[in-house]
Image (cartoon, rainbow, N blue to C red; front, side, top):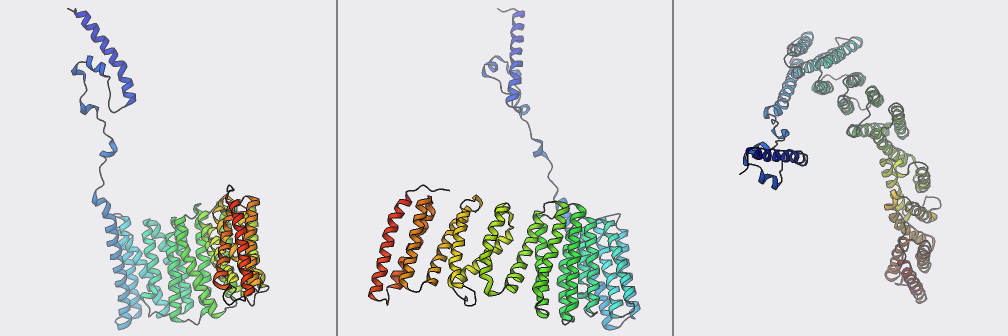
Amino acid sequence: MKTLEERLAQVEARLERIERLLPAAQAAEPAVAEIPAAAAQEMPPVYAPPAAARRVVDPQFNAPAPKPSERSEIPVTQILGWTGATALVLAVAYLIRLALDSGWLTPERQLGLAVLSGLGLIGAGLKLRSADKQYASLLPAGGLVVLFLAIYGAHLYYHLIGVPFAAGAVFVTCLAALWLGRLFESELYALFAVVGSYSAPFLLHALAGSVVDLVVYFSAWSVLFCVYSVWIGQRRTYLLAAYLALLGFHALWNAMAPTEWGAAFAFQVLQFAIFLGGALVFSVRHQRPMSSEEALAHLPLLLIFYALQYWLLHRHVPAFAPWIALGSMGVLLLAHLAARHVLGALPASTMLVSAYAALVVFHAGYMELLPDAFAPWVVLLLLPALAVYMRRRDGLASVAWPFRVLIGIVFLLNYERVVIGAGMGDVPAHDLLALLYAAALYAAYALMRRTPALADFATVALYVGHVAMMSAAVQIFDGRLAVSLAWGVVALACLALAFRSGDKQLGKSSLLIFAASAAKVMLFDLSNAAPLVRIGLLLVLGVTLYAGGWMYKKVDQLDARP
């Protein structure tokens, strides 16, 4: 029987083995300490850790979920606040209108009531600011709209105040808007003020002033909201103001005095300068170029401006409309270059400016200014110029995608015109255009297949070139036999070049010409043809097809080369 000392020595030995095994087990799996079977058999049961002690709980799963009230409280209160503030503004507006229609009060008292109502809304918002700044900011926004309605009515309808006083009142109101917006630190306030200010002439449509007054009214608010956007660092304010200014003024001008197109044109130019300057100053001031989402939000604004301005100029001065459109494109490009000089690369705004420039070049330049008789030749000369530009720059990446779309559309329009031969009577040397287009497409195929970024378009250029070459043969030669012979020579030439250069794709493309040649002879040429012509057509078709099959067999055995 073992003595007490021997048993204690065995226990100490077991403890030493356990201590050596524990660090290795912890390094392998921190959450659960595994013990070898041999050590577990020697170890008494009392030393086995319980399962609960070996389980490690990830704290991120115990994080308390957000309360439903915290997720839904802010949107609901904002909706209620906006609705309430809007109802108050509408109540004051319709109260003024009711007074105008019924004659309950004198003009001075009507305007005084409006001013007191606006000041009351502003005072209530300032009083509630300490309790809830964001929610209370809605009341001063409505109050400012009411104040501006009072200024508008006092100047345009009652003529109680002249232009200097009205301009001063507008200026004071603008300063108050800036101060309150900065005080409440709420962009929702600015957006509410934008909607309220630009909708004022529609709420009180009986206050019909002159077009010049509307120009001053809208322009003052446009400057205000551009300054405010730069101040708070948010583009949404001037963006919404720009949309409402262009569309709102156009609707009012068209209803009030559509013959005063000069004032409308001056307004459009002024708004273009104001909002372009606002966007430029914003980017430079905050050192923050446009994001993709912001550029996408600006694009419809540019399209609306272009459509409204060109429609106006085309009706009254059609000869100058394209040139003015190109001038607006030039101003936009200069502003973009200035911003890029300060901020560096501007990918999002580059796409925005490119889209507008592509639209102007296509509509004002190509469709309006370029004579129809010279369009096919201009497009033909554009292809080598584009190839040289891409070779000297970064390839296809150097051409913005709007201009890629523009070049593709213009080329397809003229390609179809050249191949079909419709409306080509006034085009100089139109018989050679199909041949030249085919040559340009073959050259494009040769360049594209060597450029990895354009390799997918090489096959398309090759087959489109074949169609242009077959059309050229139809336009140059008169007889059916000559056309069939020309098609056969082109197909055999493709096979010969493919065999010599190892271009398997070029050889396979000859099947299109062979198939078209066979269909042409069988479906069209043999009908109503003289016996000798039929014999000649069949001989030409048979020889070319047989020779083509022999050459195609050799080309098909070639390994495709990149």
